[in-house]
Image (cartoon, rainbow, N blue to C red; front, side, top):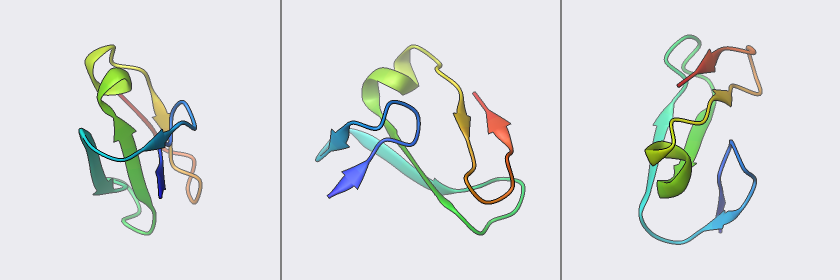
Amino acid sequence: MKICTTCNKKVTRDYAEFRCPKCGKSNIVRCMHCRETVNTYTCPKCGFTGP
């Protein structure tokens, strides 16, 4: 089960998953709600914050 990096809710569909654009070491998971509302996320490995 995937967890949204921003809101910590479980996601099963309609989500995006990608590597941190700064360090590339962590997978960032974003639910559709957080993507649509442009909530920020923080990489747990390097601390990078993105939209």
